[in-house]
Image 1 (cartoon, rainbow, N blue to C red):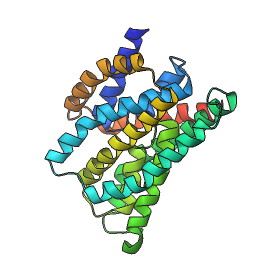
Image 2: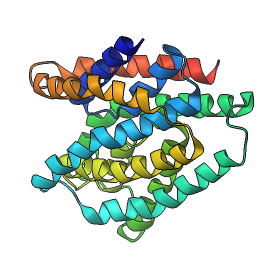
Image 3: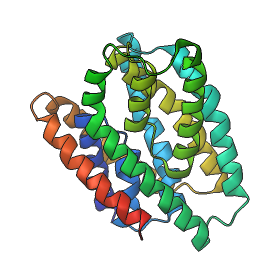
Image 4: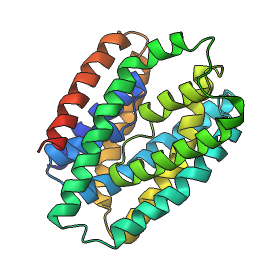
Length: 256
């Protein structure tokens, strides 16, 4: 089974390197549906997994000047309190009950379907918003904090949302920012969010540390290989295939 976890980590790492889509939207469903890990443990373990793998991205994007720290701070103003509130909710219910398990699976499914749409439409959205701004300048800050709150709750409950969903929403709020700045800022925000949410799950006792280490053994070389193959593989078709998988898995979790 441990070899299976290493292979899963390698595949997810490779796809993250190829497409930039957050590992949560890929790893959590794999842990749930293939390895039959309990939803709370799948989410908690994946959050720490994401914070470790994405921390590398902060250094890379920081050196390139791709992080807008004002955006990161505004997102964090919303996401960290929302994450804490979500954990308090989980703490006050029986997380092993069928109701809690069904709730996590349902919202995970919803998050996956939304993520798949975001993956498909990102490039089209970038093209359509080149000269348009959907949100007035006076509401940009408030919109960013609200987005952070939504991501904080969603990520803490499902481990999904900090990647494709966050980037797509930021494109709509900041259409004139370079896409590299949007991605860099999203990654910079995702690291503390997933770290805080992961540590909160650790306090709940919903982290499998052995599983976490095994996944990292596979994912680190996977990310390295995927990043180097990204210039040689047609990302368009990889995104379409990835979106189809996410939609299928998302509906399967919602309608289970």
